[in-house]
Amino acid sequence: MGLKFATKLHVKGPVAVGDSRIVVQQAQGLINCNQPNLQRRLTEYEDLKMHFAAVKLIHDKRLFNQAADYLTSKTLVLGESWVLDDTVEIVHLHLVSRILEKIMRPSEIPDTPATDVVRSDQVEIGTSISESLAAAAEALMVMMRSRAEADLEFRSPVGQSEYQDECWRRIKFH
Image (cartoon, rainbow, N blue to C red):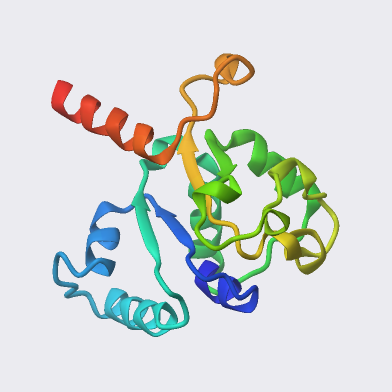
């Protein structure tokens, strides 16, 4: 669903964050996909992937994204696609999510002028997506988890490479 939306915005290189390591590995072609339902989704992903220069897939634990858990559960209960348009529900999802958004600086995105990058605080809730995100269509979003809600104001945002280093450090520790 997110990649379909990204094609409408003409994003060149989206970053997709998923909480299923198996699905991420299947999409990367690292392991086989044997379930018919997932094979249909994988085929759909392969078709959508052709619209982009590159698609980056990142695995993140569901524990750190209650918003994703809620959205997935609601979709499974409804049994069909749906659109989230309730402002109160959107605000709630922003509050329960422990994943921060960081839009990369123009210098980090090759061939992207500074006018194409928008900070997340510039996007207004209640405006249409095309109005609020038109300038950010070329920007890549990198999702990262926060360590604690209390530290948010005092910590500087962590870059993707630092995030991966921290993940590997924790894996090696356990």
